Length: 285
Image (cartoon, rainbow, N blue to C red; front, side, top):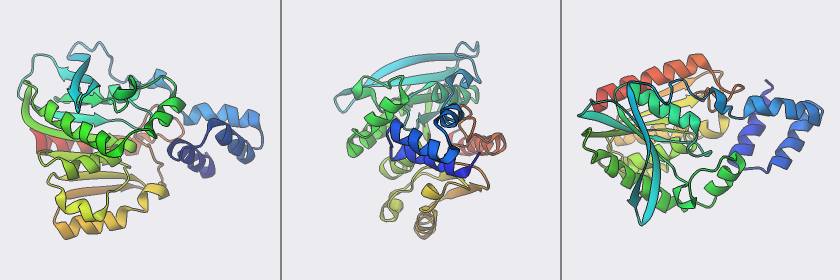
């Protein structure tokens, strides 16, 4: 697919643009509104493809839970191996589409790997993630950045206190959630590991506050996010932070999201996920 289309979709989802403006600009690239409308489903998430592990998998217990942090009720999706105790825990942090079926599936993947996995909904205070992704993205622009970060830091503490855990907690985030994973590593001294997929980098001045080892995954074609890599890596080295950094050539932002046909890259996603599981194995078990 024309890289201009991928870049435009990235602008649409992250700036964000209105859908009307996005479609008009897409039509200018494709040559017609009809072509623009036919291409759009290849870019957007297809939740019919989200379940690689069934909700009713007989090895797992899954449920939606609620808990209180900072005087609000947080909603979260959890998955865990049945009848297992003393396991590492992983918090899954969604993209700026909120807690959707794809993120729930990623949560189940971690449970199948032997973890108590929990995916909080950043839009809990607004009643939870809406079905309409444009509305979800709009709601993200209303979040208070500091309060949202503290909600997730407190969620790490809530997850650590679960009776099933060994008191070791990691996090993995994607896009918006990847940036938040970096911020949680700065703000949560008890975090044991953080994995960031194509997440915006923190202020280099804050990097020395990081205590947990990091694993960072970047898409080779993701110029917007990758612009911050050199300063981040320099700060990590200077502060002596343990980290792993992987750049996957020729793939786009969101390459791990298998519900987005145009951007998903199976080879890069497979390698990145194996590295993620190996990283958690080394730091959470």
